[in-house]
Structure formats: structure tokens, C-alpha cells
Length: 239
Image 1 (cartoon, rainbow, N blue to C red):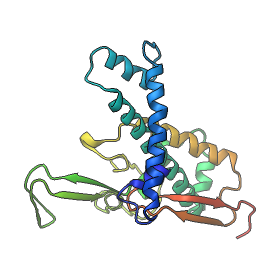
Image 2 (cartoon, rainbow, N blue to C red):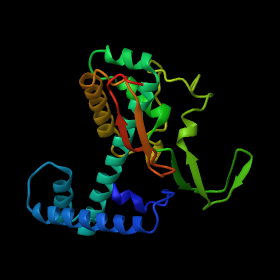
Image 3 (cartoon, rainbow, N blue to C red):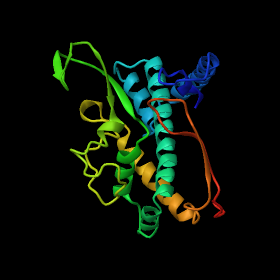
Image 4 (cartoon, rainbow, N blue to C red):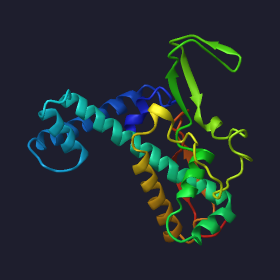
């Protein structure tokens, strides 16, 4: 998405990426501002209507705040879910025995989703600020310091996950950091899991040749939101 190009984690793209992101943000803002105004007095149960109703009922919300929240939720949810599905395809193509096992399993595979998130999640790092002076890994971290936590590395911690470099959809992959942890746990985790399970099952059932042929992957130049910018699969069976 063009909006993501303004992120500080993007490593390339030139000055033009900021203009593209600004244009995308303006378009998103116009769209959601119109939707907010159209939901005044509405009785629907969707999130946007509920936010508008809460604001009109005296909650400390503004139109700008509601619009900004919607833009953030839509962009964050789209980027991560599409990256998860494309990376899951790559992981399963590299592990045909796991692909065959999942294809033969009835219904969705929630355990597989958790393991694929642990194995190679779409968000590889987060930035936090130290709330108080602390010492971590033999280093002093003063209050207010910026700390970059590498979620991808933590999800491969052998002290937590035996044989962490092995894709094992039968392992209990709970407590991975694919959705963060604690007060920063992902707001859309339940929706993301549902989308991941449905998307994965659709790919397994709808593409019998998912594990066949070659592929071409173009990765986004992003150090945090990691995943293919474009993934082309040749399912003909040719190497």
C-alpha cells in the first residue's frame, strides 16, 4: 500500500514515496470523513457507527480522531494479513510434507496459523520506550531510552521453542509474539486469526498445485513490516 511507504522502516523508494503516501492518506481521509458524516444518527452495529454514536453521546472523540483511527486500523490490518498469507505460502512450499498434512486435515488449522506466525511473522520488530531505568542483557537501559524489540528473533528463541528453526504445526505455539504481548497486544488479533485461517484453508482447497512449480518474489524494502511486495507462482509443475 502506498500509505506504508511513508514509514520510517522503509529502506528505499526515494523522495517520491512520501508524495505517494501523502496522496493515499488524503484519499483515505476524505473517504472516512464522508463515512463518519453519513453515520450520524445511525443505528448500525459496525465499528464506525459505534464510534460516531459514542462521540455524539458525549465521549471524548473528535471527527479527526475517528478518521485517523479508521485509517490506521485499515492500513495496519491489510498489510499484516496479506504478508502473513504470502509468507505462509512460501513456508509451505519450502516444506511440502507440512503442506500435504494441512491439505489433508479437515476444517481450518488454527495451530498451523499460530506456528506460521511464530516461524516467520509479518511484523519483525516493534519500538518501545523504557518506562524506568533497567538492566537487560548486561546493558544499562536508562528511562526514556528507545528500545527496538526483535519479535522475529524472540519467536526463534530455543529457550522457549525447541528446534525453533523447524516448521512444526503440531507444536503448541502459544505465547509467540506475532501479535505482541501485554498492554500492546494487537487490537485486531481475533479478526486477523479468522482471516488467516479462512485464507489459508481457501488456498489449500482452491489451489491443488500450490506446492508445484517455481516462484518469483519481490520483497518490500521494509525492516519491520516484512513480506512480499509481489509473489508470482507457477503452478504448472515446472521447476
